[in-house]
View 1 (cartoon, rainbow, N blue to C red):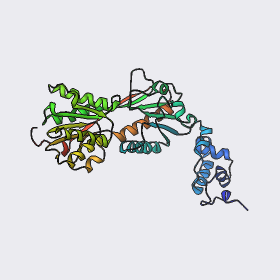
View 2: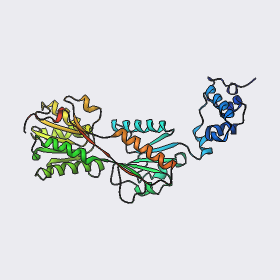
View 3: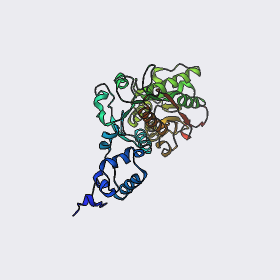
View 4: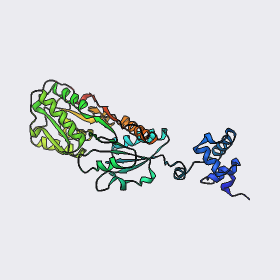
Length: 348
């Protein structure tokens, strides 16, 4: 009597390549050739094998297949964090595009940092290429990434001579437009920036755009107009509370370096009776889903998150499949989205 596996019972658990070979009346090697190099098998044989695969609902073992093709079709992804709406959307976009192109993702947090070292962050014999997102100017083993014997794509960081594919976001264009809109109804000496710590690439670039816009308006930013700590709701709330204690939260405009900070500020203001936008005008950054849930709705600078994810996956697959192709350096635009929170109730 045949075993459940060899009988082709679809409900017997994992189906092996041997089951497919028996059903099609061919060798295991022939099944493998049909799956990996179908042009080397006659059309009639290939048709019979594919029918057996479909009938048995066979799914090839990814790593066993890699032994034959010398590819795992797995992409390693190293992110600074794996929590929050931004990273969730980014991972979702990467996964969607990778699946469309026949690849899978192996995701890690901080595998690219110096203390981890890239060669230890992943089992590199399991991945065909790497996508690394950088957010800090220090503590990153950028040289190690460049020297890996794997196709690599870096998101968020670029520098002359870096021999890997890079994708960066033009933080400044969207940020400058946001600050310019705030300046249309608020004097530059009453505009404030609340962002993350010094050394965070995105926050530093958004701050630079803020300062440049104020200087163009004829004002050199004061030290008290700039506050930096972290990308968090709690930090926004704490900053707003300190401004309330000093009686300085009303009749000002604030450019927050991300939406979480902005929403922390908005909630603290609301709880103390400070109205948006009549008494406080506010803009965030990222244009997350939260912007449309807040009332009044939050103005924000839109990050092209899905575009970043798609571009990174497409770039690393191109480097995997065309290893002699030149490294490309892409820059994606940001866009200011104006909503009620930064409206013009009158000149402040």
